[in-house]
Length: 467
Ligand code: GLU
Image (cartoon, rainbow, N blue to C red; front, top):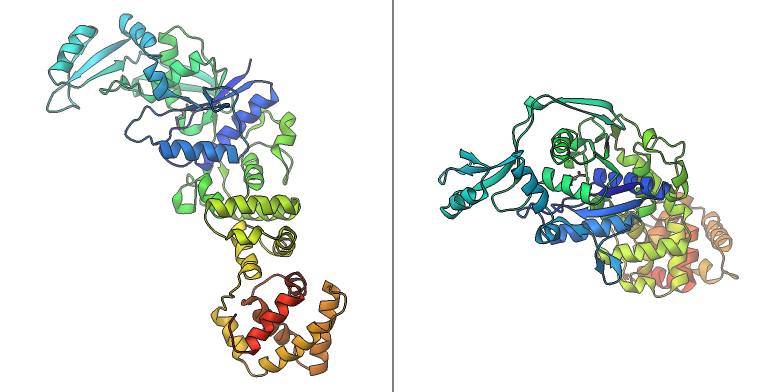
């Protein structure tokens, strides 16, 4: 049985590298009829927060990733949490075994200098005495001599000289297990068959293997997915732009595009715009590139635009609505007239690549008050603008059978009759009805606004009222 896990530490937002690891683990489980487990690694009590756990879970769900097991929370699977497992004393038995076999010891530290070890002991009661007297006490795992060798699915044979490692703290002085110990116990108890994780954990693996061996446990298979680099070839970091899933969500990247792009970061699939869920059968761990991949922000943005234009318009509106509510970015009035909203979004999405810019494009179609930007004001102040707008107004009022073609014809006829530069005329009209110089196509915009709104907006400009 294939069993994999995603094991984030809740110490910040979900990073794109983490999301990609989760996606590959999930695809691997789904492809093989296996199980995907979510385990929150929150034994670092100083740095773990509930807020981070909540946002990681929300981001995973947003990516469409679901997990197959966990405690029941309101009819859903919650994540496994290491802090709960500490309470259930799940780490005690293996710990005692390591102490009993003298593969781990209690390390006692100087009271005034908790970094300075003064004694090693295998006796639990002795350690307790020291603790009572105010000494810090950890449990440390003894690194054995020799080499640790394992076969990594991505990287092939890996060999580490154990002398490069110090003895490993496996239980901190506050009684909590450390990552390298808890991860081994949990992966073993959860019967994880494949540990597929980021390359940043590569040097932890030999330490973990030594613990498996000390406990006489069978090893899972290991795979370390290469790092994601920024365009300059250094590990992706805030310097390059955002790195968290939340950053991309907040900037209006949609989940379909995001997951599509993540999948391309190493999957090795011959495809570009696609739905990874529909290609599960083509997923093979062995095909994941062993080389680092470059994160291309512009490509993600482009891909997002492709998805935005391809998806059914009602889905775009629905996801925009959820997004704008999450980030408090638009008023609910926007969604009252569903067909109007869909028409607005239809013309706007032709020109934009993310929800943030979609919002900027859509805004003037909804708000009662137009915000004329500086450029727009200058254009409206130019000579003749009143005259041109009056002519346009008459022509628009006279259109029979409201359609994009009719709107276009009427406006072009005005331009020809008045012998004015089309470019100039269109720009004056554009800023009068939308308040901006960059908008969706002029004729489509007027068509979608409808005669009544268009007439009102032009009249307001003519009356010197900025709507
Ligand atoms: N909790 C670790 C982290 O967030 C991951 C552990 C693992 O996958 O083994 O980096």
